[in-house]
Structure formats: C-alpha cells, structure tokens
Image 1: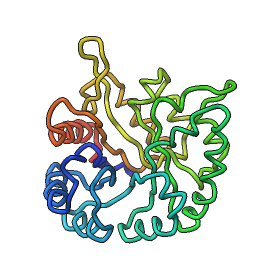
Image 2 (image 1 turned 90 degrees about the vertical axis):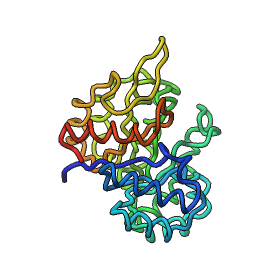
Image 3 (image 1 turned 30 degrees about the horizontal axis):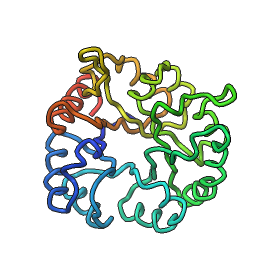
Length: 253
C-alpha cells in the first residue's frame, strides 16, 4: 500500500471548534489536496456530523486523539463513535502524568490493557502518540519499551512523532526500525532553529531528514503520513499546504 498524506487537525484546532467552522476548515484542507485527516482538538461535534462533513469534502477519517479517560471508562461508546466515523485507529495523545514515574509506569498497561483488547476485538487498534518523555529511562529501560513489552502489536500501535523523537536526542530512523509493524499512522513535523531555540516547522522546511524517514516508514509498514504542527509561525493552513506540497514532491499525496 502506498503511504497516503493526511492532515492532523490539531494543527488547525482553533478553526474547528464548532460545526460551521469545522465545515469551512475541512473544505480548505481538501482544497490543499489532502484526502485523509486525524480528528484531534476539535469542538464538541457529534460523530455523525463529523463524518458527514468529512465525506462531503472527500476526506477519510483515519485516526483520532481522544481523552485517555474515555478509553478507560467509555470504551464501548468510543468504539461505536469510531464505527460511525469509519475510523479504524483510536488514539490518545499521551499517557496521563501519574504514569510517568518509575513506581507507576507498569500501571499504564494494568489499566489500559483491557480496553485495548476490547478495541482490538472490534477490528480497530488502540494507538499511542509519543512525545519526548517516553525516551526517559527507568531502571535502564525506556518508557516506550515498557509499552512495547506490555502490549502486543495487535493491542497497541504507535503514532510515531518525528519532532519529539529528535528533541529527545534519539535516532529517528533507528526508532522507526525498532517499532516496525506498529506504525500504521505517524506524525510528521519538522524542527528548525531560530535564535538558538527549536521551533516546529512544516515538513522539509527544517533540519530533519524526511527523505530518509519516509523510506524507513515504508519499510515499517506505515499507511498514513499525518502532518502535524502544534505551533505555527504563520497561518496553520499555510503550514499544512507547505507540508503537503513538499511531501507531494517526494511522491506522497
């Protein structure tokens, strides 16, 4: 399967907080050329309405980020909502802070393994998005390794974020290889230096080696290259377009 570009809607979250704005924004995303989206950071819009607006604009919903507590305590409803949206991958943006300690990290699997298995039984996959803290070590073991050891590939996938792995000081391509087979959806954002400080940038507008990374993602079995930029120094729609055009020039659209 050829990897497909997508827009992570957290990039334009300020323009997706009500149904009217969401509709206008999805048209703009589609006009750029995107065919897939991740639902994240939007307002309280019903799943059916989200699906209708995305369908109208030719946008396939491939991944979400939802509050972790909803995965724990509202699993069946979450699965039903994703059925409505036609979305296979059910994601969280991070683990709650209480788990990020050596004496509590094992509790993440203790709490989330049951809902992860329910999600898997429904034909979907629970997805975890990394930041930089997952590359901290407890007793010589990275937090992300606690997750790979505790969940099978059928129970947990990883929304691998290129920017945060780089910020953590890790070898991005090496970690793509190490997580091969567990990366159906990934986040692409670049890193540029301005006055000695790192900033998020559109793909191929910064210093990361995306020609190398996308080849590694292909080998790892990635399906969707989702462009995300949490903070933008210009219009987030302009940033989405730059990333789209640059990735298209590499052969991905």
